[in-house]
Length: 329
Image (cartoon, rainbow, N blue to C red; front, side, top):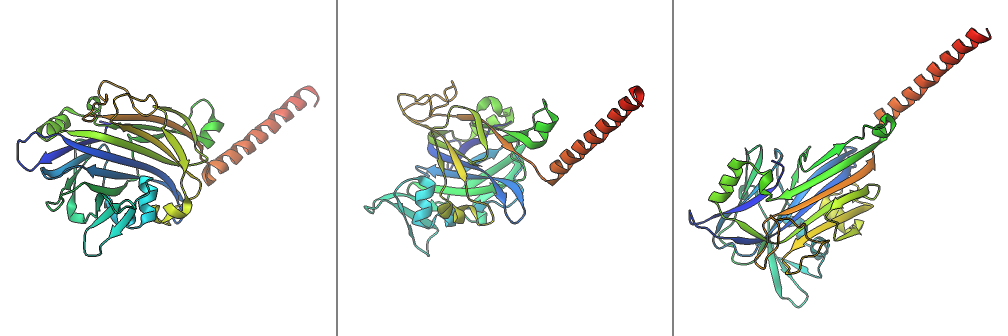
């Protein structure tokens, strides 16, 4: 079970409604300056077009979520943060007495609202070999609403994993490959029990999906399918507050994959498969595969390398002495 899954639960039991939804995934791999180590975390954004008939939005993740989920609504209270995250000339309007942030264009036209989550809005359960997040949709929401939160876990396998090459012990000591295999609502990667639970609820129809892989510029992008639609450098001053000052926020590249409703599919922006063909109403799944290569050397690997060089030098010297004593000694 290596796929993320999203479906909804209706307010009226047994009702079968297809809910249009836009989803954003930001997979970060950054160095924690305080702890001096590389950490990964996943930011998830969910845009609900109409929540009037929705009791909850269910999100299955194929790994264990044990730490507290962090709401990112408060991180989007500034216009600079809104423009950085959505890459649009929008502004944030904040009312301290409300749990929502209004997003407007500069003509003061409402675009959508951002809901600031609290601990009671998300329920986490360990099930189906991973974690099920149940996002309770407030009854007070009457307009297009966006939720965004962060999941920090030590290991994001099977979405991403490291793979050391076996062809050279020296290369294995210093270079590592990272494999990102991201699936969303890919039925062949979900268990029968989970598919049954999704069938008992309501299907979602994706109007747009975004996947961003945030990597330092010393990570070499080797291959991906499909190709990213674009890649850009993140502005350190704008993004530092969003990601937290604990992380080194310089020289970060954002690799961007997107799938959206369009009658003529674009080879570079749509992962074409029978399960993910787009239609005017939306599409049902999203898949991205990417491979990166980066240098990974710490004190232990450098020490092992130096010890190996020293051992080779000593052995070479002993062999040379033996040859000399045998033939000329």
